[in-house]
Amino acid sequence: MELIRQILSDTTINAGTIGSRLLISLLIGIVIGTEREIHNQPAGLRTHVLICLGSTILMMLSVYIPQTYTNFPNGDPARLAAQVVSGIGFLGAGAILKMGVNIRGLTTAATIWAIAAIGLTVGAGMYVASFLGMFIMLFILILLNAFEKRFLKPTERKVISISGPQRMDAKAFAEIFRNERIQIISRNMEEDRNKSISEFSFAVQLPHHVELQKVVDKLADAGKAYRIKVSDK
Image (cartoon, rainbow, N blue to C red):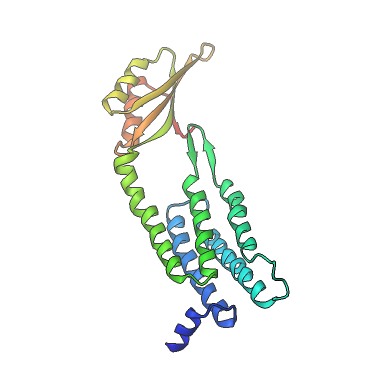
């Protein structure tokens, strides 16, 4: 127990602190990455573990260089760690996608940036800050997500395309949306007279409590649709 206390309180970079910091970084990366993996996010378990470990290693290197090479008094130990903060932004940007009327990946990009910051604090030996940061991230990702869906963002945008015979009744579709409290943002109609086919596209705000399959069934019955497609674009 005394050995563990000594290792955790040691501010120098040696075999003991390297091992302990990498293990803590691995643990935090696994915890946050597992939560992301469960929710089928683009950046999952392995990505978060690797980012956290990489940030920790670079932070330890930042501490190790001025500690070992004392002949360079003008060296900036924070410079290498600072590059992680800016460089991780490129990785986070790759997680942001615009899918039709929706933008996906903003939370994933923010999580990537935050896990890199936690990796840096582990590498600097700030264990309390690291674990507090991990628990706050879990609180935001799990509890605040449920709160946001329930109270702040009770809807999501979808595009519903309906193909069927000519002269389908658009008013019937609008009535179904109104009864289900689905807000129509925009609508579009295309007609192929050669094939006697009409297609309506509705961009809608879909409440989370609405059962999408029931809405699709009602739309199909109302317009005798050949095909109904629901997408994010």
